[in-house]
Image (cartoon, rainbow, N blue to C red; front, side, top):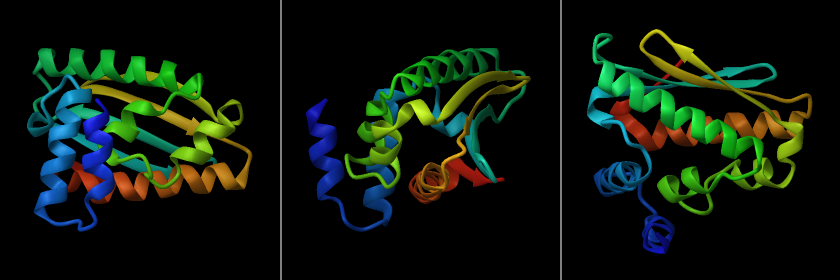
Length: 150
């Protein structure tokens, strides 16, 4: 999986090549179909909420894959493990280092949604809230048509 790091770190433009790289790296990390789902990033005063929903609310396969993936990610994040987002977005993804270093000061909670799931991030530390917001901005940019702000 180190090749994903190298590929991500050598891409400087945010054009179609970058979008294709994000999709390819995402396919290695996320089990659900990016073309059948939407990422939603909502910034909040204490942090933010990252949701992934199935575009077809009746697609139980995608909903199940979303839920299991986000549950696993939330567990990793509570342990300071942000390797999966780094694999998708590159080692130098804004906000990740801050979140890894003082992960105990970020409260991470997973919840089911009717058509997917979400992860809520909260912190009382303004530096970490800013790191969450910065990470969300980058994810919106990287995921392009597969993402929306909230």
